[in-house]
Length: 335
View (cartoon, rainbow, N blue to C red):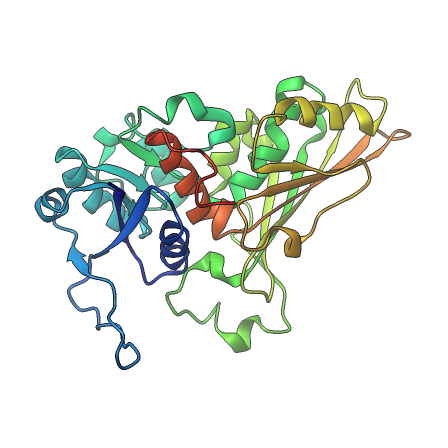
């Protein structure tokens, strides 16, 4: 019997991506869950029947035998929907930021909103498999990482742990994202005329993904400068991360740290020293690509990290987490 996996927010970009991945999954099948009473029915070609759509009512979800629900919803919606599902024994994988931070105060500081489900923050497991794989199988509530922090933490944490970054010189993360990262809800900022042939920075010094990087990399806020920028493409994230090294004599030493950290990781690809990836190489994949450049004379280093924000940055990583939670092959549906 296939695991029934509910998808809330199935009309959004991440929700559509979830449906595609689950449709080719050998051990799971998607079930669409509608959380909005005013949603218009999907218009289909004549002679075609769409997916069955169920309510998000916890009793109905549990009665349908759904074992896990993906919440591809805004944080305030996730806070409303997750607790009743969890109380009925349904596992939840939340793609929003509702349960990523560990205190209400931290959430209020960065999201500028109140948190209504503080009692669940301690139960939530942060789902970055490359770092927290052992904690994921026992999770009831899995908080899927943000797209920017996924790339940044995969790039930075091994180097921070190895003690080769001169933290007193600071770390700069220059991050660029496609428009789908803002979600499907219409806004002036992401309209065609505003985005096309344009390039803009946003949420400078107060981007809500910053605390995720700090929480998982080990950096302090005063050591980390992050700027998000919107580029006129539909999908993808490329982060150029600048820092100064200590106790490093060659780029090969940095490369060896990455190779040791990710030797057994199926979705992290390391490029030869001096070679970098780009967005086309990761588009529609669950890979994070890392490449380095190093200047021995000055100790300066640059790491470029690339992911698809809708896959490794959202739906793909969510399915990777589901695979670990339910004991499936980690790469199922993703390769």
